[in-house]
Image (tube, rainbow, N blue to C red; front, side, top):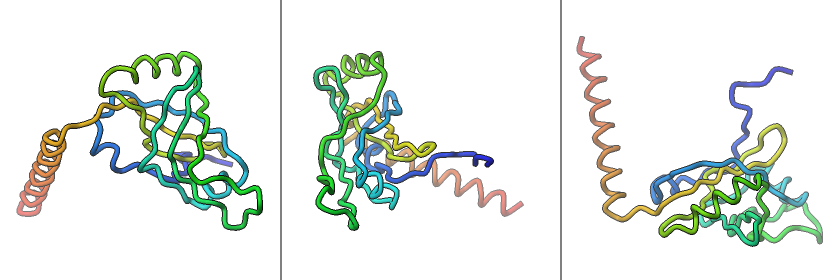
Length: 158
């Protein structure tokens, strides 16, 4: 069976992350999930908006990510906002731990997806933006859109 160009099946994206934070480094991590969590994710249900990651006693954890209860699940359904373990190499965990202890840095999830049947999360080492930085970024994006629009109009007039 031939694979497509992008083998990822994206479940959830954190759209506010790039608006609220300056992304410095990105890591891909596996997730330790229960059966009903996997089924809920395969249905495309998850929210990363309030989620964050932290390092506790040499282990990486994903917290406050909402994976709703699987509606066909029974008594052993999972808790929607439970703490989930991240699977990373020891060197990555040590690097993330040292960088995240610096002032203003945090670990946030950017996207949650399936890659070759395994649930993965893309976490970023990020630094929070100030309000004026957010306005500046929006202004730059708007200027770029206007420039692109003007270039398209010039192309159409030729």
